[in-house]
Amino acid sequence: MTIPAPRILVIEDETPIRRFLRVSIVGQGYALVEAETGQKGVRLAAAQPPDLIILDLGLPDMDGMEVIRQIREWSTVPILVLSARGREPDKVAALDAGADDYLTKPFGVGELLARLRVALRRGTGNPNEAGEPVFSVQNLRVDQERRQVFLDGEETHLTPIEYRLLTTLIKYAGKVVTHRQLLKEVWGPNNVDATHYLRVYMGHLRHKIEADAARPKILLTEPGVGYRLACD
Image 1 (cartoon, rainbow, N blue to C red):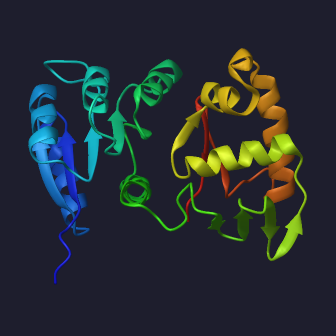
Image 2 (tube, rainbow, N blue to C red; image 1 turned 90 degrees about the vertical axis):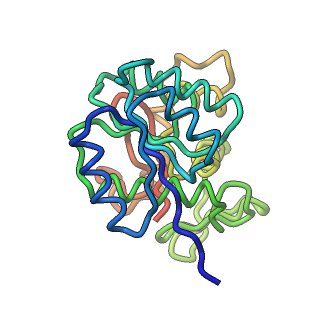
């Protein structure tokens, strides 16, 4: 029995970028569907549900933010935003609206494909996905049932806040989690502006988990937006 190729819906009005994505994505074994307007993209997403959506925010007929909001009313399909809007407020707004990840144009095809693979794993149910009792990435293993953290097989002690911060990132592994969302889930809704808490505890957590806290490989920073836990 042949497993069908994952279907990627690209909602992008610029023909050269659609052509570039077509060559890059189809060459990796994915099936591609294209829409040059937001309305067409929403219709295709409903009629032929894709495994992942790549979305430009600057569409000719409607803002990409509205596309995210409409699709999120009925679907949890992973959405990867690919946009020339590189300002921090634009990234945060898209992620808070329901996008799973955000790449700024110009982008590297290697990074695009890596983030696409991570989003697809989350969408189809990865064995290490949040909710599983044991999460593993690189030399880190977290047994959430026993509340134990191991590095290279050796147990590492975390404070309650550090553990809650780590498991919150695990819940969204591979996704960019905004500062505000992390603060709300770890410290509560009354502390969503206390970004200094987050910087301090992320620093503590990196010193305990990363081989080199100054060059993290697991707890990744998305500048000005938030953090992302590596999946591979």
